[in-house]
Image (cartoon, rainbow, N blue to C red):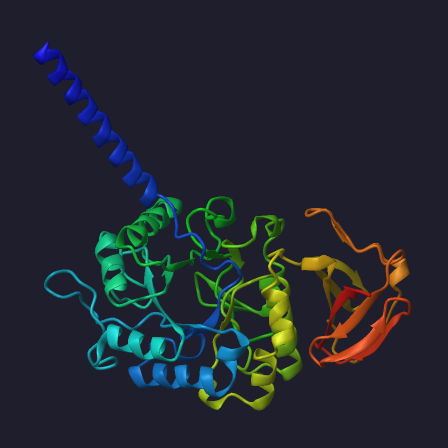
Amino acid sequence: MFYRVLLNLKKMKKIVILILVFTSINTFSQKFEGLAETPPLGWNSWNTFATDINEQLVKDIADKFVELGLKEAGYEYIVLDDGWMAKERDTHGNLIADPIKFPSGMKALADYIHSKGLKFGLYNCAGSKTCAGYPGSRGFEYQDARSYASWDVDYLKYDWCNTDKLNAEGAYITMRDALKAAGRPVVFSICEWGDNEPWKWAKDVGHAWRVTGDIINCWDCEVGHGSWSSWGVWKIINMRKDIRKVAGPGHWNDFDMMEVGNGMADAEDRTHFAMWTMLTSPLIMGNDLRVASKETIKTLANKEVIAVNQDKLGIQGFRFSNEGDFEIWIKPLENDAWAITFVNMSDKPLSLNFDWEKHDIGDDVNGKRMEAKQQKFKIRDLFNHKNLGDTSKNLMAEIQSHDVLMVKLEKK
């Protein structure tokens, strides 16, 4: 009898252990939920500064978030891209901040950013080296995740250089699990350039995933760099097809950091910003905020445009039609509202005359119809902050070259 009881106790102990192991695995095998329920808004150092970054620059950017009204507009993440770390790990294999660029270390910098009511992000890479040749995370994923947690990091951009024959999905799952095991909630931004079709597998792995290679500050160009290219705004917009259905709260198609304020015309900047908003892409600034023009800040801090990006439905917009030299994009919003963006693709000003009753506006993927013939909608010009009447009359406007008319329609 005693032997039978002892045997049963041993069996029960094994069952408990198996339950605990399964629970542990299940806990770690998922990303942090409840983060990035709308696309992240912030700033990243790469587009303007590449690896030429330092402690004072980052503090200045944080100060500008507050001074320029960007924090109030909703921007919160300040992300250091490649080049923040020393060229070698320490004797224990830990990542360390470059002692010249960041003499106070990452924790002190995170504390400064947090003191402004903002959040702090860092970069690393799934390969043995980052794209700029600094220590990557391959083989150090859990160790690096613990470092990020100890520094109070809120956001990780994770790149894909020097990965040899790694499997992308597996590599990103490893870092996802490492971040979860470290215990500090982190927005996980996957950056493998869309080469491995992350929209097919990354929903449960990261909070956003890059869908293209690197952006460059031009309207519609490709700039070659030997084995890879940088892409202009419209090259990126047109690069992927049929991926909008996978975007939604907590999992976004990322069309790369923005080039607003980096040398394009103001009109092109407005269109660039409007399109990233319509596409529900993360809105990550990439310019030098210390010297940004008033027009650039006016564009970036436009709360009415940002609200379209941050709409709770989280539906990615899409091209509705091409009419002459106009591109027309639509995006369903909550409360049966709609955002519609008219882009002048030509090199000269164009007159828009849009008859609402002649266009059957809808989104078949999400089962949304506008029904303009049965219901009148108020029209709001989001960049100029003015009302344009309603849909009982044609929408008429003069739109400059490469400029945009972005409107929100709400039921009367």
